[in-house]
Image 1: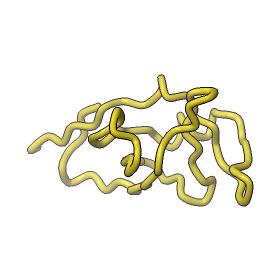
Image 2 (image 1 turned 90 degrees about the horizontal axis):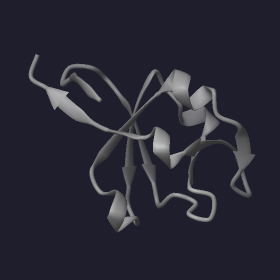
Image 3 (image 1 turned 135 degrees about the vertical axis):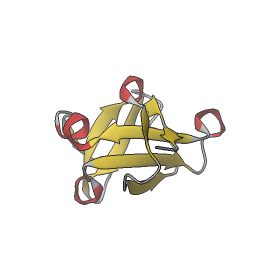
Image 4 (image 1 turned 180 degrees about the vertical axis):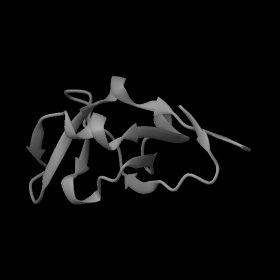
Length: 85
């Protein structure tokens, strides 16, 4: 996904995906219109990833043991690029 460098994004830091079912758990209270996803512990998922708020909210809800989250399939993540315009 290419978005303007001036477009504000909600930055969401995630340790790593839940590999057993290949989903990313995103806390419901962190979801914005434009979401920049960064993984801090998953070496294979380096870089910035993009998910729109609409895409996230269409996914089923799950619990990570403490809070309610959206279970977003890894396949829905898009590499994020910032344009100069």
